[in-house]
Amino acid sequence: MAMQSSAEEPIPVRAVSEAVAGWISRLGAIWVEGQLAQINKRPGSQMVYLVLRDPSADVSVQITTFRRVFEAVVPPLTEGARVIVYGKPDFYVPRSSFSIRGEEIRQVGLGELLARLEMLKAKLKAEGLFDPRRKKPLPFLPHCVGLITGRASAAERDVLENAKRRWPGVQFRVVNTDVQGPKAVPQILPALAQLDADPEVDVIIIARGGGSVEDLLPFSDEALIRAVGECETPVVSAIGHEPDSPILDLVADFRASTPTDAAKRVVPDVAEEMDRVAELRRNAWRSVARILEREAMGLASFRQRPVLASPYSMIDGRRNDLEELTRRARSSVGHRLDRASDDLGHTLARVRALSPMATLERGYSIVLAPSGHAVRSAEEVSEGDVLDIRFASGRVDAAVSEVFRADDASPDIASTEESPSE
Image (tube, rainbow, N blue to C red; front, side, top):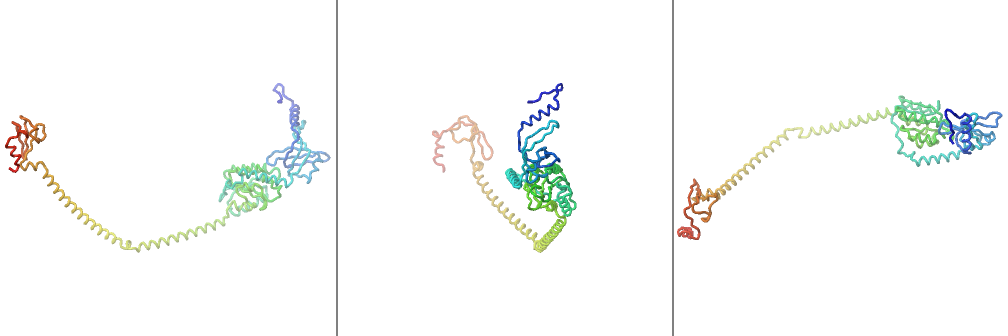
């Protein structure tokens, strides 16, 4: 339960320490794994004091155990060894210090380490961290190269010397860290984050010389592997020699067999590039010369063609053709106009023959009723109507004094109708 306190009734230090000790004592015994960072065996004391550090973080815990428990481990424990401790958490009230009282210590064997690495490798592969599609290409000529390696190490010297020998103008941003032991991963992680956040760094090399499986364990640490997989900057793994294969090689964007090989892969060789540029120039000149030669031959061939040797001959020929076509066009148009004129004359004659005026000119007239329509029979008029009689030339008005229908027509009219020839 929470301890009740206030400014007026504070809790003494001893009460706090005793409460913390009581809570920790209820945790029970646990198994804990880590890497031995420090071993302190005091002369004449039956107790051995160990510092157990987390391989992936800057976190450690004090281990106290009896000398007989410590010396029972085979092979003998040394600093840097990976161990599993069975013990009970303990809180020492007078000093308010936390520790684990170790009752059994087991050293992690090489076979178990390799089995754990294989399990971790399978887990990360299933998550897709080794997918080739995730790998970023290395820049052709990096402006600045980030290097994470041990201080004054052979790996650092190999990378710097070989890179500057190949491209003297290359710049390096070197961060020295531990490359083995319990402090390696806690130091490499912030160094990697620092270089990845630097906009001037175009590629990062993590380099270390060869060593045993235990020495190279930091480069198979899960936290480091995931950090490399999340980097935006391409990462080159240059750990150990050709046979060495930590998990970092699988997640890195490029795996170099040695630190020297990493330098060769990251920066180009200035001599090789100059030779390549010279060869490209020679190829370009040869290509241009071939193109010019081909175009000159084509131009000479064009100049020898008749159309270019005597260009006016083509114009003269086209002029004759144009004159002939003009003559033929005018002749064709003339014939068409003549035929059209004849057709128009014939049509005009037929129209005139059928025109009412032509009938009037032959002696006939047109009688119009007062309503204005032509009178076709005597039945259409009445006595007293004023008729409009039109001739070929002029017109007269006539009043109807008497109407003779067909049935009572006068004998003169009847005889005229019966004898039209008279």
